[in-house]
Image 1 (tube, rainbow, N blue to C red):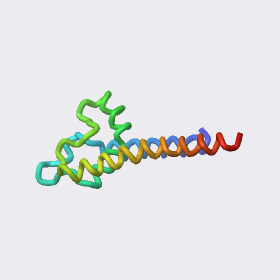
Image 2: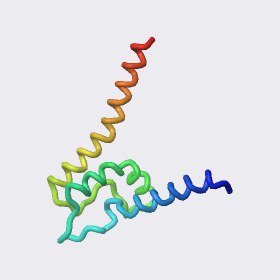
Image 3: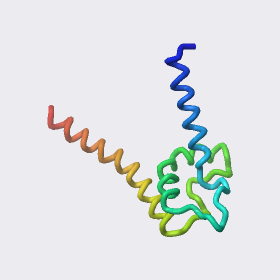
Image 4: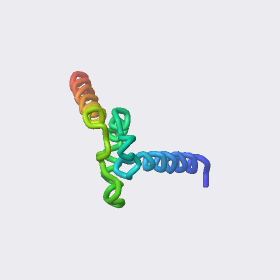
Length: 102
């Protein structure tokens, strides 16, 4: 195999393994150390991937049940809204810029 094919494959495999280690709902958070704001942000960013993985692994969830409450929720929703909203805003910007050049 060419190195141009091996390197992207290894990089994708590394990213997949790294992200799967940080999925919500796997029982990583005991009751004395719950998921907080920054884990909420991370779990919000990887929510689409968590959804796909949860189809094959029923222990994985999109949302960590053992969390700190408001701060986890705030981080989770900030990440979900900014992630999906950011794509939407960039598309609107591209469309309006593209339409002006016609």
